[in-house]
Image (cartoon, rainbow, N blue to C red; front, side):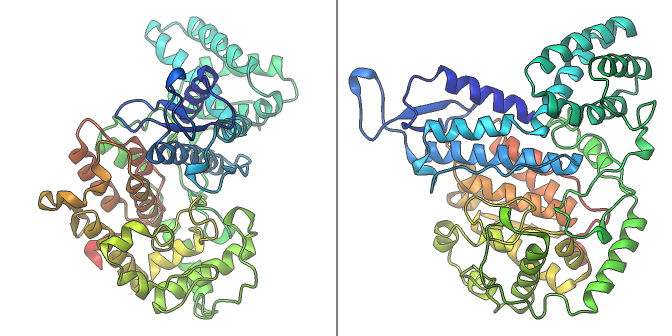
Length: 468
């Protein structure tokens, strides 16, 4: 659970003996994330040492991951997102004050409140459901819920509690317990509206698209699914068949909607003549219209190979000529090859993955071919190769396995980005196979961020590299 990771980091910082301006990082060894602190020089008498750059990068990436996952989950639940920035120029400038400010802002989000409440309810239910006594189960859940409510902002609680109860009902299908909890909540918060006299059924619930929406024409209002990647029943230990079942969608409806939207877009030559952008804003500051303009630039970048996206310095043809050293040292190209629906802290002006991009990719063989080339290029850089939707680790190229070091490497975050892109554009089988192959190679040091990435809800229509 993301909120658990936030709480754990918060507790570690409270117990940390260092100044607010002191540099902080996280240990790169295996196991739970452990915060470290240091200064510009050694203080032998105090037992402090310099924090290494790789430790700061690991903590910085963890904070970035928490921000993105909180906003991603909020979008899927229809909750308000919040712009949270890590206020330092680069990971090497990360201090205790900066890190704690990020954690404070994350805790003051509706999504954090949602997850804290749901986690408390779900844990109590799992601990006592074996009794079969609905009254006892309800009392235990309410006790856990009251404890969580005391520590959370009331305005956030009121905003998310109807959805929490709805999710709880959908996951456990316990009418009596759900109704009991709902009555208690109504007694505590009389002004909370539940949208009806009973908890909504799964058939009536609409799950938003995982992709940042810039148009209502391509939304999949008929899609239903279980918990999102924060929820308890799509855990990292879930069987592959269970994961596959959770990706079920009403494909025909979505395919029709996508085709209709694609037809409308193609009629105006979408992406062939991208508009001039005078001032490129950071992704978090762009309006829907401005993001649509960046989408057109990305389409021209991908289709022509020669177009430079506004605010970026690479063309696709230029990236294709990258050596392995360039793939390693450049940090502003991966966002162009594999856009995600959440902003990047490393390339803040890069285009985001939008519904329009997904529609174009799913209907344009040229874009699918270029994505295939991009995937093969990055896999080769990582010492891997692909056949169709199958991904293989080449043991003879272990020197390239930068994602499989005993300590953290920034290529691990790049892998997450690629997996999110594949999932969000419909290449589900390839993403699942890639995550399995890489985590199998890592053995007991499995990367949980990758497991989370492949639990992202894909669009209704699946694609396969076998068909390209």
